[in-house]
Image (cartoon, rainbow, N blue to C red; front, side, top):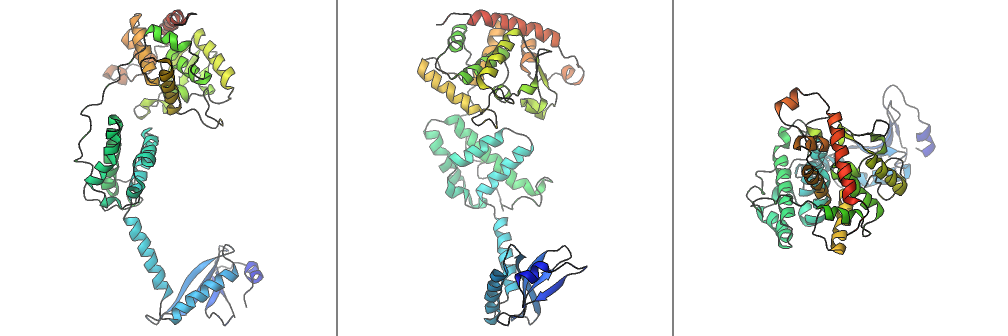
Length: 414
């Protein structure tokens, strides 16, 4: 009779061997010991359907105890006595699971799209996850994707549009359309062939859904010199968020490039901030780092940031310190500031436009402003031939900008 000790002490051999239980309560019960040492409970029986001798696995020891295995074996033996074949039942269950997998849900489809975006390093992956959680009804997420209709899509988008979020409505539409397009073509992509769930899609239900707005409004907001001074000396922002806005304005870089910056990227001896290629918006087109020249004005800000946040890795750590601050944290802070101050609405992204506008007004050329801000230079000469880093010229332009910015913010509040 099998015991826990007998099974535990059983040593592997060059080939599989079986230890059978002498317990007559459940004939055919035993444990198979593989050369790898894996021990699997089984039940041997004669199939009542085809008369063949068969064996079905029950579970592995010690994850499954001997007592539990005996109970499961007894239940299977009862099925055999009632004319059922456990092996056939198990195959049917597997086939049912495979069939269910073949009919992936809308939630599965969106998850596939998110995974595809993440492989390509697209920041939109985070936004799509948020949209799935906040904008797609759970009942739709659980429905097989091939059953989603145009009406379902419209029912999802209409509440978003009716609350006035027209641009966001079109963003949700665009992401859903892209997700269904991926589902239609996943099996013809080497990346996903044989890996993605089968959705049985015959068409894209979003394709004929019209956009809410024919054209997205372009951002035009840039702060005036007086508004810059007002924000700079504000008491309506927390110190970390105010310093983030100041560093955005002082450097002209993108919001996430500033919020996700690490102290390791700064070479204060060489007076440069080196933004790695993988952190740039243009990382899909170039892996080259972006070099931002620093001045004494920046060093003073960096010293304030260090004293305020006190983090060894990130300039602007999130609560807990394991990650940097998210974009929406600064966006929400600015929204509250605008409401409290009565200033014309602006977003953190508008600070970059403010840098571009005000530095242009003081005579810095568009080319040099673009180089300072890390815009991709798309002409053939820049892409294929010009290897010069323009660091000397960028230093002069940045020095001119911070000198003017010092005059803007010097001492006086609105």
